[in-house]
Image (tube, rainbow, N blue to C red; front, side):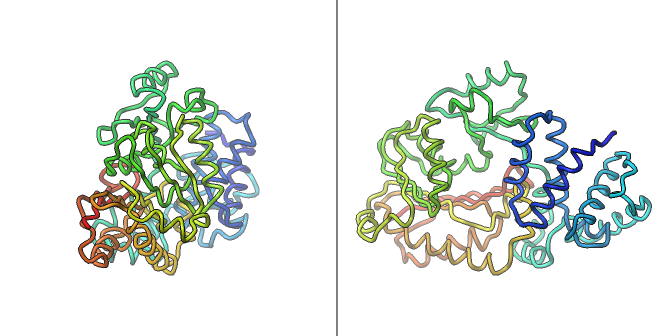
Length: 403
């Protein structure tokens, strides 16, 4: 297969942005593709898959080329190694000088004997994962290195699943349903919906199946008062609104005004009118006091390590630290304690993370319930395995305030 130099240069530019300059991989790839609209689907896939692939397996490539990926020359060697492994014929470019096929093959075989090199994770993360998950860690880690599948959630405020299915069939988009998430469609291949008319008209949102399992755990009804304490850009907020049939009120709180602005734009597109966005700073002591015992339902999709979504954000492996995880566990506990008094008696609170670590999940919830001294009880929890489902790793706990 022929390699076009402009596409290889784009991959290197993307890798430099992420690995040398510390930018986020998803923003980098999106920016590259948006700035080069002449690239076809095949070209775009080449660029995205090779940027993500090299970031995902950075430690493996460093082992193969016998140097850290800290300069442009090393990045070219890593790209050449990946292309060679995929049976491309490497062009006689100066950047690929020094690639010895036989030696690379030997190094690659050696790497298979070490999980932390084969699956490309830092030593500390491999040790923590094994300690937390025991024999499940290896399968989860391997699953989280697979490219993420694309799934969408039909927006039932504007349309039906049958209508979206018909639109996809007319457009030649292959998909399948997903029983656990009734409004979900899983696409057979990745698509860019930026200019898709149905998407722009708010008929569906891009949302992983695992994420779509969170809002239904709240058991919301039209007319309820709901607090979404960590709303972000609002994927789960809008799902809640759809389940409430746009009747009632959702107070959507986040520390980021930028994310809340995006939530407002998405709400307009979705035809949602019941979301009231507030930054955490806007919640004065008076307002917080007024919110006590006011909510029928509370969702806390808390900040977390993000280990369950490594297939989407592989660069997180190289920026996470043990100290960050220790800190985020304390943050999670603080959020739980802060919002717990806002729920009415007999109300439901759902706690969720996109992490696979028990310290952020089961252990966090049990510690919270113990601190509440009988005020809260655990009704149900879901541990969503990336290895078993093929979707993001997630944890969801449904709790009730009993007094």
